[in-house]
Picture 1 (cartoon, chains in turn red, blue):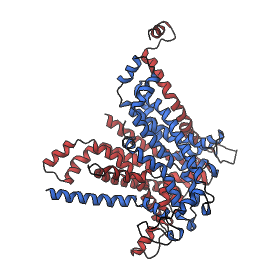
Picture 2 (cartoon, one colour):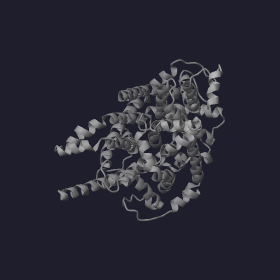
Picture 3 (cartoon, each protein chain N blue to C red):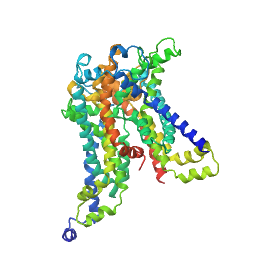
Picture 4 (spheres, each protein chain N blue to C red):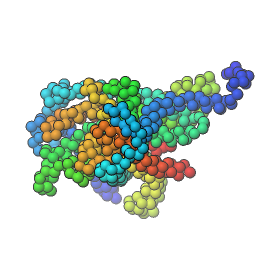
Length: 305
Length: 283
């Protein structure tokens, strides 16, 4: 140790202070992770951005610069505005239901009762189940010939003939929304449960002593104490739902007017083999996402202040 | 008063059981359908109770015979295990170093880098898929499991860094300072003192990235066409064929594909719950 510090003092090259030297080690620790992220995230994003200004198809080596042509083409696609509308419906309605269901269940789970951890695990299962397993079982339940939902609705007399849930405009979007909400509520439940558990029990006891009822307690204590984490849950849920690709692609492939921006971009790139159009769509998605991320960053700053 | 409390409890349990039955019904229906014969599964039978235990669909999809003859479920499972575990482990190693660095040192732009890493985690995978495909082709990794191991880090690495950073921030600085006075260097201090203390966090993070990776659809869908290299998250989809779909077989394959994550979840959920609750929120 003493030898080392003596060397530090004597050697002219090591004129850094100990703290500065230490911070160099810190950067060294950080470097491998950053290098990987640059290769697999930053580089692809820049690549996508570049691609969107060229004519770029996988089989054609001729790739001239075309300016904003790809963007105009995407704008001119009849599904473009539909996909934006769907994305917002899907993200906002989806996030709303996930947060409301999550909050309700979190309040139930915040109570101490026998079997709580089993109940919590059972309520989290829809999130644990692999997406493909979830989607296929819902496809099976929605099936237009033998699906349980059709059979039940028919036997109960709600419908006269079987419905093709995933083949009809509107109904298809509602169906994928239900599946998305079903898969996403557990995350909100866990996040909000953590928030609820941070509220001191004294507050509830004091309110009870003063004769407040359940509804008053919810609006006067629970909701205000939870407001920060609730805002955060809402914006995170919107971002995650906004990004979602799996459910819609696996259930309808964007058919029956269910395309969101992400599935449409995938269709451009991997079905139509138009990487350039897919890239233009991706950049458009990023522009929207930037708004949400900005809101998120404002919230974190507010929380820290 | 005591009487009223008891009624309250009964009402609570009834509501709880009703809610759980509704939310877990699809999972129950998946298992029930998988245990049914083809004739019965297409019979529009709505009886909720499981009346038969027919494992023939499990046998067929597992051994790849009959309608499942084009299915390699066992290789899909092994491939998924290899990809998901390797990428989770690579991520946690890089993330331990990076998370420690972000929580302990005071270099420039530290907060900005942390925030940036969180935002990377919130990127839609769709945006990365096409350029990553070009990268994979350039690296000659198309139809190679290493391509998936690499790209799964796009979500497991930023998440792991963010979580490890917050776990390390919660540990007192004095511990590793004491270790360093006793002659440990930084790397030893992290490995011998900090990592064991952050072990619950490591377990939670790996569990989470394992579940996320097991579920991923877009990458294996785009980078693997070779039947023997497919992952279980998309592999059994080839059984779905419109009105001719053998739904009992599909449900059996879905049940098998869910088993590893459900088992991991059952054993490690107490670690996972803390991590899930703070994911992305804790700063």
